[in-house]
Every structure is written in structure tokens, then in C-alpha cells.
Amino acid sequence: MNTLITGITGFVGSHMADYILEHTNDHVYGFKRWMEDTKNIDHLIDNPRVTLFSGDLVDYASVDRAVRLSNPNKIFHFAAQSFPESSFKNPIITLHTNVLGTTHLFESIKTNELDPVIVSVSTSEVYGMPKEDEIPIKETNPIRAANPYSISKVGHDLMSQYYYNAYGMKIITTRMFSHEGARRGKEFAVSSFAYQIAKGEKSGNYVVKHGNLDSIRTYNHIDDAIEAYWLCSESDRYGEIYNIGGDETCKVGDALDAMIKKSNKPFIKVLDEERLRPTDITLQIPSTEKFKNDFNWKPKKTMDNIWNDLLEYWRSIV
Image (cartoon, rainbow, N blue to C red; front, side):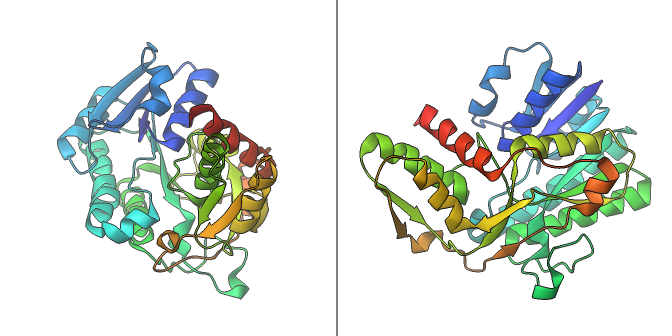
């Protein structure tokens, strides 16, 4: 079996590669950007069951080459411009990468007459800011994308549904809520907290800068997220859309407080206005009953596991 992972050097893509290599005999083909930092997969570079392709989602020829040469039975489509903050500064790049890039992938599959199972990875951000009577957020909630990133992922979702409806492609769309763990980039809030704490413990600078601490998030450990993605790839639930997320909810500020308590240093919190978004989604609590019922899945790890893993990860590399 051949599995193609777009965005293999990223947080989720690298964990997906690890999972497949540990639990299956599949050959892993990874698609990464030209000159992309490979630190997340350096331990896989010499593995004979791993083949890497370099390119860019917006470059059809490089996407098509990866699809043709990998001849995949499964595709996990993680590659994206996935930073909401960056999307405010670079909306054109965000839209090109996430909408045009996804279309390039689907067009290549269609043109080459391949028939893989595709896990098309979207985001909870497409729901935008829900109303009070819309909590928990179901797959049927209105779409109210609130930033260029989430708008681009709405386009991604619609292209996924189009290629399923028009061509019968085996596409399952996931809308993952907050998921964290080792290798999460410090561009994201809770990983940034862990990074600053780990760095401060060594430097003596006991300041943690933050943005909005009142946003409410439901957190899922990366290991549970990866298992959920894999279950999708093993199913025949084509055309379905699934919310996936954890069972524990807290304010972002509570996550910061929990990690500070795990340090023996006197950290103080300082608001950094540059970390505030022009528009923010401050309430994300998912209903994951559809996914749990269809796949007999539930998260195994806790928020405390997440905080510990993030701190351990950053302490090991700063």
C-alpha cells in the first residue's frame, strides 16, 4: 500500500508519517515545499519506506508528479497555509495555497484516473463565531468564516464536496478543532506559551507574552487526532464531513496558567497587542458525536498530557 502525505514536514503530517510507519507496512510518500525545513522528519529521511517529493501546491506540475509517482492508495491532505495570523498579512497567498492548491491535487487524481481514499483536512475555523444557541458546534452549523485562512478553508471544503459529487472521488472531509502536542509551531498560542516558558527557564527572562486569554477552546492531543485521521482513511464514509476534537474545554488563559504552574520559575504574563487578531473566534466547543458514533472513537489523552508534552518538547530544543 502507498500513502501520500501532503505537508509531511508539518506538525500533523510528520506525526501521521510516524503513525503509518509504526502501525502498517505502507510506503510513505511525502510532499513538501521546496527548501522546507525538515526538522520534524529528520529521523525519517534515511528510512527506506519513505520517499519525499519537493514542490508547491500552487505549482500543478510538482503536485502532479508526486501524485503520479506515488500512485497512492490513500492521501492525507494536510498541506496548507495554516496560520490565521499570517492570512491577515498574506490573504492572496493563503487563498492560492488552500483553494487552488487543493484543486491541483484533486485535478491530478482525476486526470491520472486514480482512486485513492482522500482524507481532506479542513478546520473548525470555517464555523466562525457561533451564536450561544449553536453550542456545541455541529457539522450542520452555519459557515461564518472570519479571516482569510478560514475563508480559504471554506473553499477547500467546497472543492472537496464538488469532486466527491461530480466525480465520485473517495473524499472524507474533517474539521479538526484545536489539537496540540510536540512539534506544534510556536506561531500557535499554547505552543508559544510552552516555548516562552522553556526559553525563560534557561535565560532567566520570566515573561510570557500573550494575546487574547479569554478565548474558549476544546483541546485534542495530537496522538488522538492522528488516530482519528487514520480511522477515516480506513472507512468508506465518502462525502461525509466530520468534526473531530477533544472532550476538555478551557480558556486559553487557563492553559497558560497550567503551564506556568508546571515551572518552578516566577513567570509573569504580559499582553502583546501584536498577538491580537483583527477579528477573533473566541468560542469553539465542538459536537463530535457524529464521528464518535460512526467510528467508535474517543480521545484517550488529557489537556494535562498536552501541556506536559509541549513543555517537554520545547525544553528539549531551546
